[in-house]
Length: 246
Length: 187
Image 1 (cartoon, helix red, strand yellow):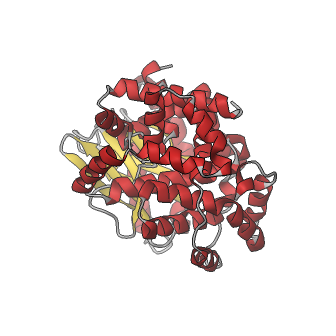
Image 2 (image 1 turned 45 degrees about the vertical axis):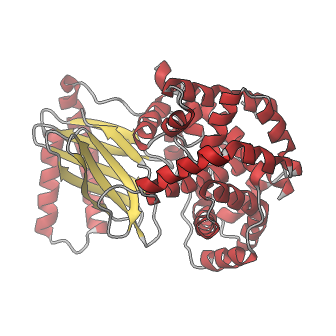
């Protein structure tokens, strides 16, 4: 266990980590069960601090909230298996390049099926040709000799599968994502020495989403945030996913 | 509101909310809204903004109730973590740099944690919190309360208190650990 990271558990439980550290710590948390236990206890403790500042909200707030929920669809529960994935780290680090050929080959078969299903359901309007092109690009990426496959946890549960080929300069992102209110969207970011650059939006309607994007050589990190519909020029919320690319 | 922290059934109530029971949601609202609103208001200070963020959080509880996992903590902790995070996000994203400086300057003058300690004493359910806060060292208490009630990140706390980063993150952790033991929170 990394002692330096481990001492961040208090700051994390107090939501006092800057965005960058928060992503790092959450990566750590997904792999360290003892840390997750500690954070749970510290969070419970922090929550008790709220008892000291409780204050009755205005009655109008209750009316507004009750009126709003009558029009808000609830999310379904997560499948049990996904739930456990938050607690038990399944995520390997970036695999060694030697292992990658094998990994990519075995994953390719499984993922391709998923990609086809996703595309036919979600992108019904795409022409067959476009779908085939997308599929070919995906297969190409998965089969790249330098491709690495990685599972990354996301804040709020679940995770994303990321396939990266530095040689092709491409990254594929795939995740079963919770639905967002209609005025919000997911936005992907690439972070490097020249700053944070938008890498495109991901529809916040909920369900399995995939995206393939070009990754310039100098990009160091990949992140996903929740932004107002239409996206933002720079991230305005804490990333739900943040991971190193190298 | 008094029973929010220890009343039995907040988890069960949330289960009913997850099944779409609006009446259960109303009962849940009555139990947690005081802490949700109070905490957000403490962090944001601005009443109108606090109402807005509290509304978002309370609707979010309805929307994502089915995603609550009792294995990962209590319902109250789930709700307040969400509330605190939203409040902190609002502080950090919406405010321009000058605002932050202004806020920091204000903090220098009015010393948030003393105010908090005072506010806490006026409330019955806060007595234990206050007693436990009193049991911390000054630096532990400052680090914890500035982060939690003030919404400051640990580098900001370090800057304001003029102590090294490493010291602040350690004090946040050992301060919370001491509070945890004092409050008898399950580990």
